[in-house]
Amino acid sequence: MLIRVVRMTFAPDQVPAFLALFHGSENRIRQQPGCRHLELWQDANQPNVYCTYSHWDSAQALDAYRKSPLFGEVWPPTKRLFAAPPLAFSVAPVL
Picture 1 (cartoon, rainbow, N blue to C red):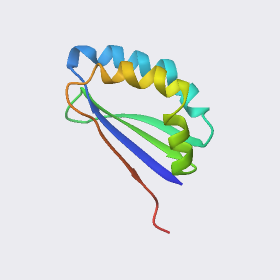
Picture 2: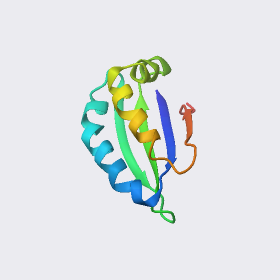
Picture 3: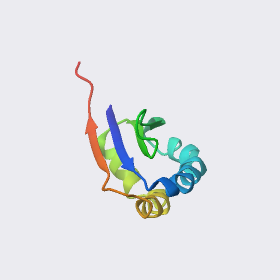
Picture 4: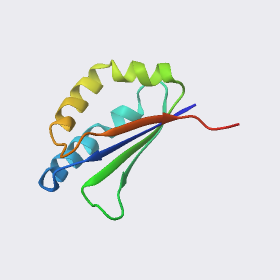
């Protein structure tokens, strides 16, 4: 399993647009092959900072999603709302 975290800082006035994008696509992302879990987190101290937290079967499953038409529909409009570059990283559980 692969866990993916993407931390995104939005211009405060762009948060409603981001939330609309996320809520409009979250169920379709969850239905992507290999996606086992997806959550949206909001920073406790900075209300314009959000993180997506997702579980994927493998790095290959995440890469397939990142090459999918859905990702092309969601990520470019999300990027336009950023106030700072995103921070994304993947981790795996230690067994």
